[in-house]
Length: 101
Image 1 (spheres, rainbow, N blue to C red):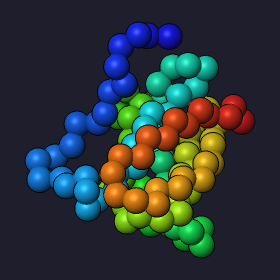
Image 2: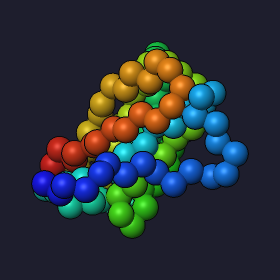
Image 3: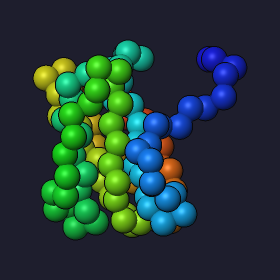
Image 4: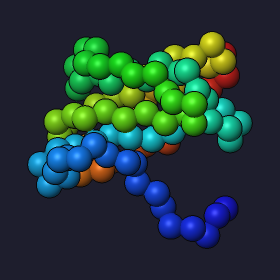
């Protein structure tokens, strides 16, 4: 494991983390980043809210209201689903490891 400090995402100018919630992270498989995975943000009732495609480095980011969320990842190599408790404004980091189909 690297001894360097944890990295936070690069955010657009004007984002006020005292008022906004940013759910972000990396999708991996066997320790390697997964580009091109579809990450869905589902609300507390399981309804679709938003979707992004991971970057070349497996990164994703959502701007959301504080609350209970679920992240659902779909990729040809597998999938994963994880509950997220983002109960206050600020950064919420979530690591998502694909479960091979």
